[in-house]
Amino acid sequence: MRGKMAIIGDGDSVLAFRAGGIDAFSVVDSSDARILLKKIAKEYQVIFITDILAKELDMELKKYLSTPYPIILSVPSAKGSNGYGNENIKRAMEKALGVDILFNKDV
Image (cartoon, rainbow, N blue to C red; front, side):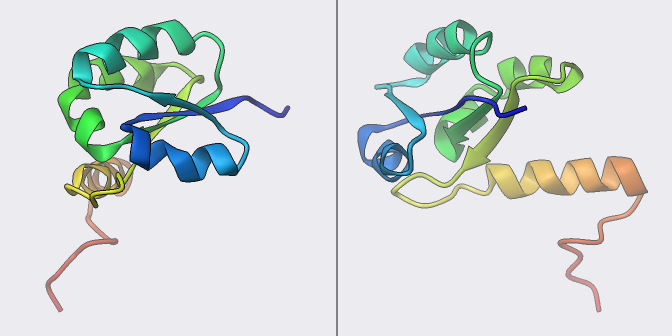
């Protein structure tokens, strides 16, 4: 099955995705992003959202963890990353394996 993909973020951050054929939605703030996410979640199977917005929408994003679709992935914005995506990967790995194998700084 080939699913539809979208990105939600600020104007500069979504441009590269649009060039790659992904439906790009530019928003001004997290309030707009929250409304848009609810609207497009029924239509898209994969939704990218910039780290900055994802962190602000953390509670809403957790609601989608128990559903097969959409898969929501945070990506750095044009301004860089705030670490939200890495922290989510770390938590998921710790939950699945019981240990942090990706970001363990201890040698």
